[in-house]
Length: 346
Image (tube, rainbow, N blue to C red; front, side):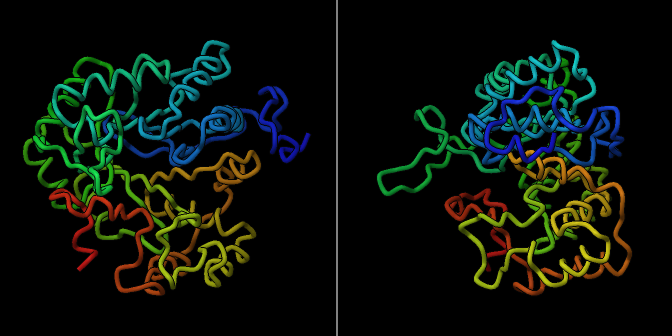
């Protein structure tokens, strides 16, 4: 039965899907004490009501890496799927690499573990493979919102301004307790990573950031390689639906250079962009709720990019400016002293 028949409903059982778990071998990269599969399913912007079926589809066609976060608002539904597939023996828990993230309103020491425990409970798990500080920016807790704002609709920064050391210290205790195998960072810049490294007893295992041909993040990637920090790319297709797109920023899927590379290898431009991250030594977490696209995004191991392809892709950012263009720039946080992209706004 063709996967497109499931597009509108997502009600099919795992047995109806056209590919088996045993038929796919996914390479891994080192992530702290673990091995992280290089392709995972991103769940950002995957709404409740469809995200569970997307995760179930992904696991059924061979994904072994699922990326989650408290702020996405969909962890309870994902947890129902985890409970089902693990209890039914469809796949073993230890064979799936699962990430979640600490949101900005929970950076104070007394807030960290309770937020972690909520994610663990929502996901119906005994442990996480990776837990990240989602942003270096701390927002005011206890205001009944994950996005606290004042009367002028300006984001309210945490009045106690907890340090990275305060937050990181609790994450280290989570590792020591066995609740989490690895800890890391997301959306931190080099200076901020350096600060964490200066006091960390447990080194960050991973950095997750936006990365695609319009924002290759080559300097940051090289830094992480030197530090032994694994690198995960989110929005690998350039986040085509973003409201923050640059006026010169065409849909990367339609870029003529990318189209040429895709035609050369007989694949889609999306598959080229996913493979681009893999061939740089990264893991990558494309997001989709469409079954055929979920499967296509995993089908990237039958080709590799050559040196000429990589050179083209590494320089594609110049089409939109000397620094490329970040689509997840969170300008509403730019007044924070911990805003990570200040240098890009000069």
